[in-house]
Image (cartoon, rainbow, N blue to C red; front, side):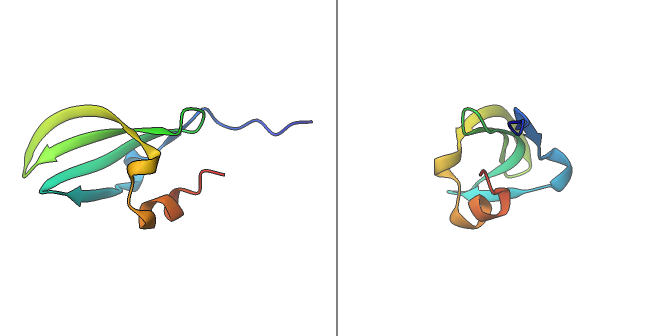
Length: 69
């Protein structure tokens, strides 16, 4: 039988984040089917909101950590 992949992987409990151009992105969920992530955006200590982020735009270190395949 075919192996069922989870449609989403919850990342909020792993506390994975990265900073780009002074903005911090905290990873919340990874959607394997769409290869996108939900991220929470912080500008300093101020929470700016949640946004959908393409997997391809992640730093290489985080891509290796998530192992999408």
